[in-house]
Length: 252
Length: 380
Image (cartoon, each protein chain N blue to C red):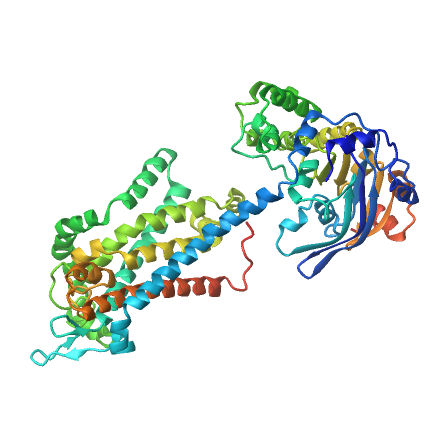
C-alpha cells in the first residue's frame, strides 16, 4: 500500500544550474499525481529527487526535505533503503538484456537475497499480471531475454519489475513517451488500476494523459512549481495565467 | 527508519497530522491511508535495514584496490631511483646524451663496460625507433582488421578471424623471436630490404630527395643489409602489438550504436564515408587508447627485440643497421654486470624506460585532449 509524500523547500542543482527552486508539494497516498510542463522545466529532476536518483550524478546537489510516509529521505535514510521502497520506471524501457523475463522481474528481490522459490514464482506472476503482461509472456518466461520483447512489452515488464518489490511509491518518468498509442493506452489503463494500491507520480508531456490518469496535477515552469491542484481544476479553470497559456498550447 | 511495527500502528491511525497542509491545495486524500498489514515482501525488504555499511565497506574495498596500484607504482619507482643512485651521482643528466670517441676508429662510444663508459642514448634511440616503426606498420593494419571484422566480414568469418587475431596475442615473445630469426630476418634480407634499397638508394631518388637525408648510403636504408636490426625488430613488434590494437579497436567500434551508422547511411554516405563519420569518429578515443596500450607493449618488449635487433650500442640513421633497446640491454647484461657502476647504469636505464613509458602515455593523452577539445564529447 502506498504512502504520501511531503516535499518541503526542495532545491536542486546540476553544477551551477539551479534546476529546481523552492518546491513545496504534498503528494497524496494511493492516488496518481501528474507533473506537466515544457521540456527542461525540472519535472524529471523533481521525480529523481524523490528516490535520491538525482544525486547519482556527481555534479548534482539537493537541499530541502522530502518525507515519504514517516521517513525524511534526506535525513533518516540511506539511498539504497529508499529505493527499496520507491520504485521507478524510466522514459525508455531499460530491461536487463542478459536476463530472462522472469529474472528481470525477480531481479529486485533476488539482489536483496530473497530466495523463497515458490513465493518468487507467485510474485513474478502477480507482478506481470498487474502489469498486464502475463498472458503475453507466460509461455517463455525463462526462455526469452527481457530485451527480446517489443518496446511496449519491455516497458510493462519494467513496471512489473518495479512492482515486484511491492513499493510504496511508484515514480514514472514519461513512461509512455517512447511507445506507440496502443502500448500507451495499456500503460495508462495500468496506472489507472495501480493507483488504488500505490502512490504514483507520473511525469508526462502528454496533457491528455495527465487528464486521464491523475487526480492531482502540478505544472512546472523554469524550475518552479507554478500551480498544483486537482487535475480537473488545472485543466478547466487554472488560477495562474501561465498554466492556462501552457494547457491551451500558447507556448511550450 | 521505518520498521514493520510502526506500519502496523499507522493502520489504526487513519489520518496523519501532516495531511492538514494538503487541504490547502484542495486535497481530500489523507497523506497516510489506512493500510492492510504489510506484505511479506515488504516486511522482508524493511528487515534489511539501510545497508549503509554494505555500501561503505564496498567502496572502501574498491578504494583499497585502487590505492594498491599507486602503492605498487611508488614502490617500483623508489626502488629504481635508489638503486640507480651511483650512476646518477657520477654522470647525472649526461647519462642520456654524452658519449666518448673511440681513438682508433673515431666512432662515438656510448656503452663500454670494459672501459667504464655507461651512456644510454643508443638504447633510448633503439627503443623509440623500433616502437615507432612498429606503430607505423601495426596501426593501419589493425584498424583495417577491425573495420573488416565489425563492418564487412561475413558472419561465418567473424568468429574464426577474431579468434586468430587474439591467438596472436597469446604467443610467447621468445617464440616470436625465434620465428623472426629463422623466417622474418631472412625474408627481410632476401626479399624486402632489396626492394627498399633499390627505391631509396637509386641515383634518381638521391638526386631528387638527397636534401632530406633519408635516401642514399646515409639514408634510412643505407649500410649493410644484414636482415637483423631496427627494421626487423620494428616488424616483429608490429606483429606482436597488432592483436592488441585490433581487438580493442574492434571492441570500441562494435560498441558504436547501430543508429549512428543508419544516420550516416541515410545521408547518402558510402560505406567508407559511413565508417569515417559514424564509426571511427565515435570510436576515436577508444582507438587511441588501444594504440597507447600497443605502444606500451612495444616500448617494454624485451625478448623478441633482443633476438633480432643486433645488440650493438650504436646510433645509425639506417633502419637496416643494428641497434639496441632499453629492455633488451637490461635482459642481456644484467646477469653479467660485475661492476657496481654497470649494474647501477642498467637500473637507471630501467628507470628511464619507466619514465619514457609514462611520458609517451602522457603525450598521447595530450594529443587526444588537443584533438577532441572544442568538439562535442561522446555522451555514452
